[in-house]
Amino acid sequence: MKVAVIKYNAGNIRSVGFALDRLGIKAEITDDFDFIRKADKVIFPGVGEASTTMKHIKANGLDSLLKSLKQPVLGICLGQQLMCSHSEEGDTDCIGIFDVPVLKFPPTLKVPHMGWNCLHDTHGDLFAAIPPNSYVYFVHSYYVPLCENTAASCEYITRFSAALQKDNFFATQFHPEKSGDIGHLILKGFIEL
Amino acid sequence: MIAKRIIPCLDIKDGQTVKGINFVNIKEVGDPVELGAKYAREGADELVYLDITATHEKRKLFTDLVKRIALHLNIPFTVGGGINEISDADRLLSAGADKISVNSSAVRNPQLIEDIASGYGSQFVVTAIDARLEDDGKWWVYVNGGRIRTEKELFSWAREAQERGTGEILFTSMNHDGTKSGFACEALAILSENLSIPIIASGGAGQMEHFSEVFTRGKADAALAASIFHFNEIPIPVLKDYLRNQNIVIR
Image 1 (cartoon, rainbow over the protein chains, first blue to last red):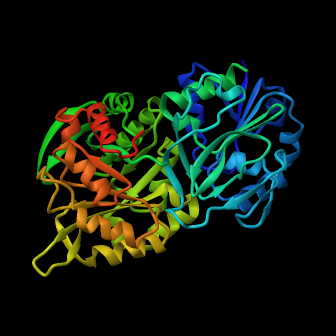
Image 2: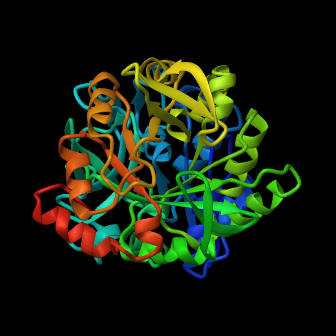
Image 3: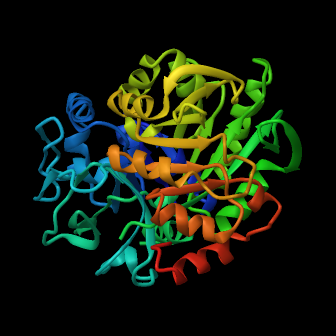
């Protein structure tokens, strides 16, 4: 099993590698396009700001590479947002795998949405082994609204997409690598696809 | 609904867990990684590791420890202590920390909060504030582990930290710390109502009722405690069951 974790100018990518270690997987944290193309699974993590990150991704062609992949791809947090069409963060055009925009939370509650919250309406391949209403860990100020690709939802300020799935592309707004045993099971589900 | 967080805090000296009572007497309570993993299994929502090592040479021990923690722990953790410049934050991020907390260094150089927040995001910066309610009725901020009083006042300093980009405030009441008589709920509620970022309550946890109080009357988003967890006076699963029965949203 070859798993590529895409290395780019984003924070705390290491923790995804550690989570895979705990699953007994030695992932390659890499920016080698050839390795990424040939990997069995690709993970696109991300913590950071959308516009600067997107600039970097476009400059080195990572956007076209990601779109062209046929194996299972998992975007996490900012990774999910960048796989959407456009982000209100820095008015940024994104990669456009999921045809849905990324919006800013109105500040009617504390923003960022930080902490453990429940998953609702889970369906699709990532959540087969996950009990309903499981808690996972979120940290974000922007959100993906509900759409036809929503694979799980969560309630904070509004009901939003906690996870997306379309063809071979998967994405989570929460951090499975930090979501305890439930997160471990979700990552395991992805690796075993 | 987002869950209220329970956060055990581990003080680390020379790579080992210790707990200071009222910032003075220190007792050892075990291996930091093992203890952290035990808390994660028991349902802790997050962990805080504070490096109270005084010397620069021993700092490397803590960075190595952070790497081991990141490898073994599957919940978020914050590290603090000795973060004086952006390179310290960078070193701990690279070691795998999810968040760093700044305290005295941010009081001396508030720009540090902005530098770290703009470099790594607000979610990465927790501003820890130790303050004491004094006879003049004001909460004064202390630095150097509660040894030096400053000219800063709690509420204005917390607001400034928010404006400079901190993602959370960790407020320790020195009046309550180590007393096991409950959290500083009034001050906490003021912080929570006046700021738009999460507030972590610290200092004073002794009984389970104190946690339900701090989440209701104190309006805190998270509660931190050390000795009651380290000495197993209140096991985390028991505490969480109790809070659920009080209709508090708990993971």
